[in-house]
Picture 1 (cartoon, rainbow, N blue to C red):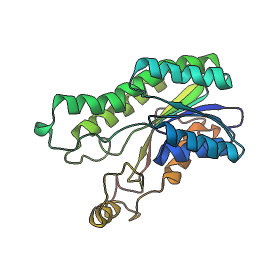
Picture 2 (picture 1 turned 45 degrees about the horizontal axis):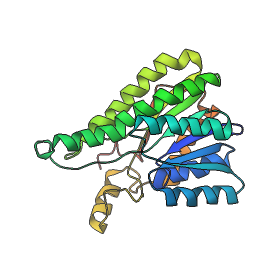
Picture 3 (picture 1 turned 90 degrees about the vertical axis):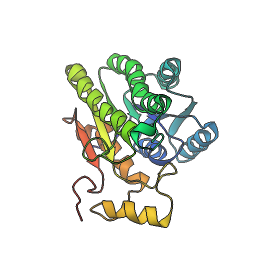
Picture 4 (picture 1 turned 45 degrees about the vertical axis):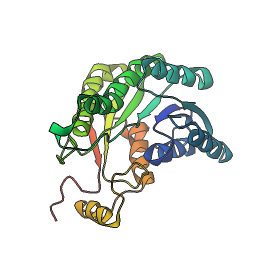
Length: 252
């Protein structure tokens, strides 16, 4: 049920954290993976690791905020592996954290471009490639921030991630009858290099926000992405799936 055998998958933000774990997991379950991020060396190391484990993968270093790069990524999947079935659009940024009056317009635009506009550009080219295969599935990494919780200093991030849920719902309605499922994945605090909590005090605070009283390992979020990408979720579309350790409901 969780097999991705015969499928071609794009995973963005794959140089570390959730994206790296997902690329490895998708490959373990049979997908041929095109891994993308801005850091070429880390991507190449990932691809070598996947191949050494018997999987198939290709690296595509690039900045997916640019439309030409978004198109080229899909072209890479088609030319290298023959098509596209799955896209885990996971790349993103927290952006500058500050009270809204202190944000510059450039801060706002940078966060929205990375998190939301890049998702639009990705879907613009991924969807036609999936239609050529008779269907497929898109997963966008959103957040509980801007969906179930508001957090001070994160207005641009919250707006961009909430926008991804709206985009997910619109695309699910627009392309469901054509065999394309679209879902958003909303992780909780996760132990990644990009995590904003660094000190022991910050770490303890973030852990305490969650009902499970800990943060996630990247592999745990990757398993939720695998579910959404696989036939196990064949009747799941337009959802905002919380994999947040209970941070959305916790009040203790």
